[in-house]
Structures are given as C-alpha cells and as structure tokens.
Image 1 (cartoon, rainbow over the protein chains, first blue to last red):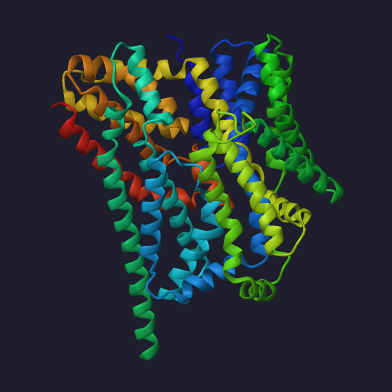
Image 2: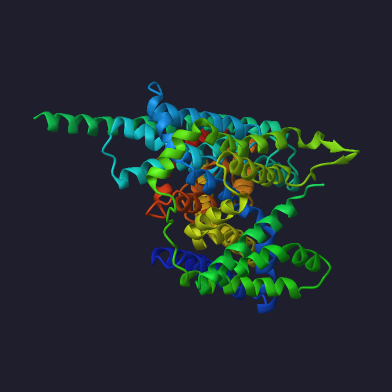
Length: 231
Length: 322
C-alpha cells in the first residue's frame, strides 16, 4: 500500500498549527497528496477544478448578504436588541434553548437550509442574544459580546447537526444505508434514523445546560459588581 | 423552470460586481480575487459539461484558477466592516420602522420553507416551477431575491444600495468564503489519492481486535479524528466502516448495523464541531459575526461536543451489542 499520500494530512496539521493562511495550506495539502499518489499534474489540476465547481452550492449564503446589509443599515440589529430588552420573561437561556429546539425539529423534517449563520444567526439570533445578555450584565465588554455571539452560532450548529440525522430522506441516513447495501446488509432508512434519536435528546439537554450555566455565570458577575458598587 | 444553476449565476454576478467595485477603488489584489472567483462560478456549468463530454481542458483551467486564488488569498487583508450609517441614524430608523424590519429577514427562512414543503407540487401550465435537484437551495436563492425586494420597500432604499451593503459584508468576510469549497475539493482529492485506505490499513495493524470495547472505542474515536482532519463526517464514515466497523464490530463481534451506523455517524458530527476544517460551520460563522478570533465558534462548541460524544459512546456501548 502507498502510504505517502498521508503527508497531505501532515501539511494540513502543520499549516494550521503555524497559523498560516488556511487557503494556500489546503491547496498545498491537495497538491501534496495528489502528486504523491501518482496523479499527473494535469489530471490533478482537472480534479481540483472539477471538485471546486461541483461544490458551488456551499457559497449560496452570500446571496443573503445584500438583504442583511440593507436591513442592518436601517437598524435591524438595534431593533432586535431593543425588542428583546423590553421582553421581561425572555432570558438568554430561554431564548437560546427555544431556538435550539426549533432548529432541531426543523432539521428533523429535513429543513436544514431554513436557518443558519447567514440566514438567522447574524441578523436575528446574535443581536437578540447580546441584548438578553445585556439585560443580565449591562457592562458587557467586547470579549463578552464575542462569546455571546459565538454561543449563538454554536447553538445553531448543534441544533442542525443533531436534528438532521433523524430525518430519513437526507444525506447522512441515505449514505449509511447505501454503504450497507453495497456490503450486502439490507436496512430500512427508518431503522437507522430512529437510532439518532437518543443522541438528539442528549445533545438538546447538554447544550441547554451549558447555556444555562453561562447565564448563571453572567448573573454571578452582575451580582458581584452590584455588591462592589454598594460597598 | 427554476434551477439551482440560476442561483450560481446570481452569485457569479454578485462576485464580479464586488470585483469591479474594488477595481474602481484601486484595491487590485482584492479585485482580482473576486473576479477570478466570479469567473469560476459563471463558467462552472460549462466546466462540468465539458468534463462529462471528455474535454478536460476547462477543468484544468479551473484548477489553475483555484491555485491562483490560493496565491491571492494571503495578499488580501480582511477589511473591517465599516458602517456607513451612524449609530444614531440606525437607532432612529429602528424606532421608526419597528417590527417591519423583521419581515424581510423572516421572509428568507419562510420562503425557503414553503418551497421545500410545497415546491414539488407547484406547476404553471403543466410545467414544474422548480427543478427537483437541490430544490431547498433553489428556494433559498429565490427567498433572497424576494427578501431583497421586500427590504428595499421597507427601508425605502433602492436595490443597488442593497448590493453596496452586501459587497461591504462580502469584503469583511474576505478569503474565508473560499474555505468550504476548497475543503470539499480537498476531500475529493484525498479520496482519489487513497488517503482513507492508508489510514484504515494503519489502524488495522495496531488494534487489539479481540476486545469488543477496544474496537468500539477505536471506531468512535477514529470517526472523530478522521472527521477533524477531513472536516466532514461523510468522508470519514466509509473509511472507518470499511476499516473497523464492518469487519471487526459487525462480523466478528456481532454489533447491530443500524445502531452502529447511526451513532458512528453522530460521533463524526461531534468531530465536525471541533475542527477548523469544517469551515462552513465553524470559520465562516465566526467571520460573519465579526468575532476577533476565527476559532471563537469552535471554542464555544468544544465543551458541548465532548459531552455529546461521551454520551453517544456510552449509549452505543449499551445498545450496539444486544
């Protein structure tokens, strides 16, 4: 067996560890593995070009940018923040847990493209989360804001990933079924999808608890600041 | 009929527009970057159909374009997104427009949802409105166009102003837009180069195959590691199944295939949450949200990913051998 193409992985790891710009690192890794596997340079170029243009759908989210830009200039984020600020019952943990549940259920029905970092997190969930965090701790610094936004994006990802595997007609389940069919084991998509349910529930509980812990940490900091001020 | 290819042409037009804007502002490298990427998007269908017809030259040229983009990426600094409306202006506008601002933002998911649910039943004079392949994503593109129209009505600004704002955001994301596509291409090159087979070969030589638990741990952690390296659980699955899952766990230790497949894939998903290689889920959102660290989203996910992984491995051990 030819083990030399594994050096492509080493290129990736070293490139990321040394914090080089990831774009040339990834292309170098592809060239390394391809050439060491014995592909001719022209065949490798064609493979690279063909696979790049075959995955153009990954850039579809840029079409949301003009809408988001226009709405943000007209105050979308400011409005989302003011609105959340006025809703007294809606805490940070409730907002994010509610979104997590909605995202998981939508993904379970195969509706993964409906929400996402560009579609819902940047224009809606992130500013709302910031406002909800500000209600707890008015003195949020920019590092805290980064963290709150990152948690909003993480909640979106987790909801999507651990919902979509329960849907029977989507990539993951069909890929598993296709692998088994190739190797002479017949399974129905439903039997595979069903066993994604326990992890889906575990993921919901774990992320909800972590969001709640983060909220409690903010509340503690706010309480400390108040007691310092009164002293 | 609306096809997802039209969405690619829209993207190409937007990228070329961004390139021309940068050219007028004498941002040479950045202009070239967007122009090359836009050209790749515009010519993509031609590249694929020529390749299918046996002419490899357009694909080779596209590959050259990809390498050119890789050389240009370090040259362009990511511009910090400068707001062209003051905070007071935005605040006043927010108070004036109120909840109407939500309407175009919500139109994006709602229209996408409607197309995903009912798109296949929609036809005009016997012709289907939406083509079957990638219907949800075609719906997303349509939703963006409708939402842009609605946004310009609500905010009383023109559609070209939307393009100007959109291009500012695009410049703020910068070279990070490339990563998802490049990593998909890398996965394809790795597969063609036999990287997966080599890893499975190595794993088989060091594993104590008599222990069911050792095999299960190797399978689960192998899914995670391989996903971290490749950035995609779908690429890891066939490799780990062929190397460990099928011969050792199913055939030797009698594991239940449905449970092993489903939960094994989910172990891979935990890996996706931890790796910068899954750029579209981890690095692009960090850039979109203008976090200072590109790894901010991964840091926020790491604890959850490890806990979910531990839970999945325990569940798998409890159920898979019964």
